[in-house]
Image (tube, rainbow, N blue to C red):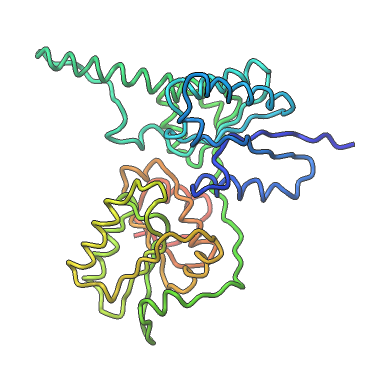
Length: 341
């Protein structure tokens, strides 16, 4: 009889979260494999991070009891999912039970940019010493919360070599990593829409550009909109996505709308708003001619974008900035050819 490997996943699940969708796609793809049992721990990291004291202790006890029947603990890691020593306590429980520990890491430390505490050499002024002390303490807290738990892992999955090297600079052993490129999802080409065509009053000869995902400054939305001012009027832009359900990008959404109005592009730019159904999102993408990824290099030199796979899955031409992660993906699987510019 074939031995079944039992995996307990600690991840967002069945909620409006890109990582939740990503993990569900992975487990769905593994569904045909009868030798693997995938189960999600029923308390989301988005709920765990809000718990303190006895409430968190109770959740940990439940986790500890449930973990007994599993062989592997798989953790989807994002910095906002865990506070203080929560992740360390979770991993320590798994280690004490001699379970294999697997992480999927989405954001390497260097992608945090200005939010990443960096150790500096103090100047002569007392304030400089105080600032250096504060930064040093912040860096140690970051290491304790997010790096120390990784040292106990058996395997760390990262989507790029750039991400791997970033974690290595924080002391994580190279031997723990496995680089796995982001998978391209299957699409249901039977689903059709004409929402983009109707909203942009598409006529013969129109070229519709698109971006996909929550509106974000790091995704180059501003650059995509401004590009229209250099293109003939028959070029139009569909922003397939909208405000993040958490409200974290509301201000940028407002600025985006203001920019469209200021540049007098209301008839050439359409914002779909949040699209919760993947099949509908893909159908909208297929209404467009070219997908744009003018992503911020400081951030996406380290972070891979699952949104890129949406264009690939729907066989759309891609115009993208030369971020390290995009170039690395193209070197591994040369689907972009000469469309990176």
